[in-house]
Image (cartoon, rainbow, N blue to C red):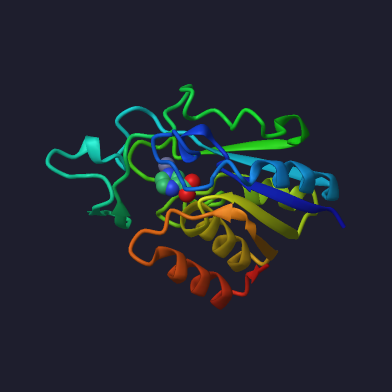
Length: 198
Ligand code: VGL
Ligand code: ZN
């Protein structure tokens, strides 16, 4: 049985110096590259927003980054502009071994809906196509690493567990944004959904 390594959003904007920098985001790159050798399949995800995306605070007059807004699909955190399609910030960290990737999943391209998860947009129903890809390859065991632990890794891991995958999150190869206790809440939520946090 093929096991897949899912590498979430290891992009310049989430690394030190980037628009939505995660502390220590770049430290995990060598460990992720090394881990790729242990997997029969490697999938990378890439946060990929059009300019003016509705998750950007700059798209909402008078609202600031890290506040929240009510969207038709629920509460949305507002972010600094980040991972704009084709920008250097949206590119993978230069040291990430992208050659090993079988598949690259882009997400967050719908201007009206954010997409933290590698499986569904934040409405929890619009699929990215990753589930179909993994199913047709006969893959049901996933290990997740990347950025950020409490947002995109968390949403991806919880969705995967709900879809029936066996999911391990290697927390040593993830780094968190940690907004108002979001890291503790994410860890609780993942464990509560049956995700193995290693
Ligand atoms: C992410 C916030 C906004 C992530 C992406 O990769 O965790 N967080 N977009
Ligand atoms: Zn984003």
